[in-house]
Amino acid sequence: MIYDFVVKDMYNEDVDMKEYKGKVMLIVNTATGCGFTPQYEGLEALYKKYKDQGFEILDFPCNQFGHQAPGSDKEIRTFCTSKYDVSFRQFKKTDVNGENEAPIYTYLKSKKGGCFSKKIKWNFTKFLVDKDGNVIKRFGPTVKPEKN
Figure 1: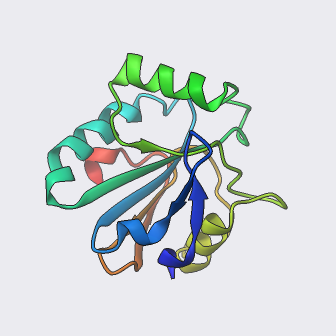
Figure 2 (figure 1 turned 45 degrees about the vertical axis):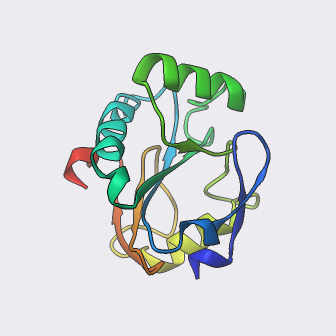
Figure 3 (figure 1 turned 90 degrees about the vertical axis):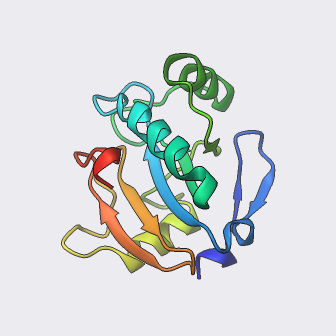
């Protein structure tokens, strides 16, 4: 279950996913230098619209696709807050594929591979998790957050 994982936030602190019990989550791997980077604007709008109803966005920057997230966690946060006014939670830069992939991504992909491969193909792949911790939908990078 999604609540069995502990992940690192951008400050390298442990975050127990149990903290999100009862909340709807959109988990997304992001990058600051990608053609999809402007989706941060849509993600922030979605977050502001629904956060008071128990909605959370969990942002996992990833440098695996074209090295499009080359900065440190602090540099990524500074970019996101200054350019897109991001206020949702950001986590430590994370591998989403391969031998060093984060266990939470192994889990997400196992639940919603669907018509997608078991691999994440690019930045801004999104997983929607319901308030009971069920992974209910996977959105490809081209699906804008306002369509989620």
